[in-house]
Length: 247
Ligand code: SF4
Image (cartoon, rainbow, N blue to C red; front, side, top):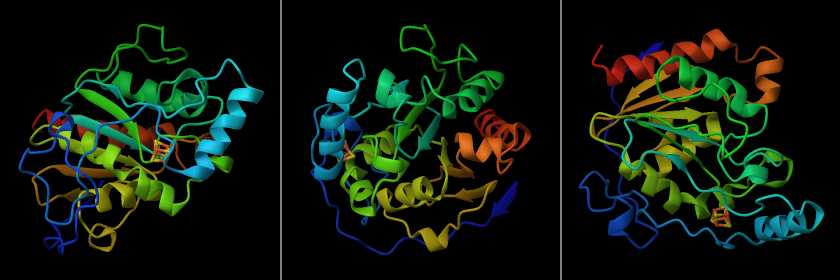
């Protein structure tokens, strides 16, 4: 793991959303430039391109969830995993992050190996899987065409991400999967991505005392091309476990 020293305090940036005390705001950990937490709206259609894509998906795939996908896991986690966006035939189908497609295979197996999940396999929201001290969310809650949310769509979703970030307990760990999630997380916290550079295995101390761990995304492409091996991913999740256990 690459250890990176703490970065300077963020410059001020105006909060862009209305605070929601029920979603974790008011914890006193938000910086001046942070996005205010926003209660998740399961019927959100704020992004016109994604709303249209989902409307079409509900017609072409009537059995699919095909709506914004809520975060999954405990309400006040030690570990928050931040993915990119639902996969069309995974979370967009089942309604639970990383459930039912290839991207979840390595994620849940590794979370299970380190005690964060009750099962190694996540194929259906009714599978009984529970997360332990862990929550999984996405930078964008709606499936995007070609798995690529636009920057404006990630920004539009930042209030929901901020709510999950605010819920992470003191001394917790944020595990970002991929550069887009990394930058979305930092911006939601009011921090500058250039002060906390992305690299696989990078580890940053955040001004609020929590830790940010970065990994390549556990997508089918990355795992099948060897960009991300099980050993590489295991090392990052294992580091999260060590941090939470005070090692
Ligand atoms: S990506 Fe987020 S902000 Fe945009 S429509 Fe979906 S839930 Fe709403």
